[in-house]
Length: 259
Image (cartoon, rainbow, N blue to C red; front, side, top):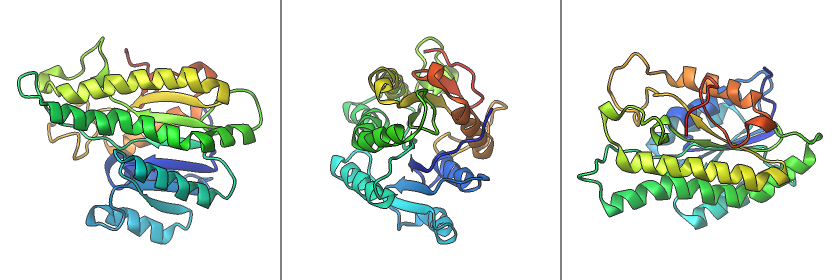
């Protein structure tokens, strides 16, 4: 299982939790990317302080303002990344930004469902569309005919909660709108894998585990994992993905998650 070798990577929702974990680990690789683009909603705000501290120490880290529910913001982010890359492509897009709640069949609202889909499903769709030209360029620049994340890839951060076959952690909460948005994201990933394969772009959905983050809640459970363990595992999985894995749904240990 090789180490990840990418010239450029973009991580959304990068100011905390799993996104920040990805940024830290990418910067700490023996051969770190030439460019790590860390996108978040408010780069100068208090919640991005850790990201700002990292950027002051790592000249290859560029913080990009991004609101994933606003097409104009996505377009501006893509233009900014393209400017930094100076004619090269983007190897890896990690659609990590997401929101969650514990809505139930009884209390879920139209507005709540809209908001969840806008961030968790439509956001990754629009980002993938906006960065497709740069991903295509990276695939074209890379030698060989196979697919890999070192060449060009879209990784959508999904959740076992989106599995229809095995409704994960139902006993802890229905999380209705969240589950539906992640199930839809899984279908988007499958469609992207079919549509983008001809362009040399690998697409996969990852379940990071039940991670100890603000979004993951405060319930204590022996199956919970730290951000460090989750991200380390996912980067190992990402580095090993090949053509046979495009369109799959895997967890942070590389195990197949049922649709």
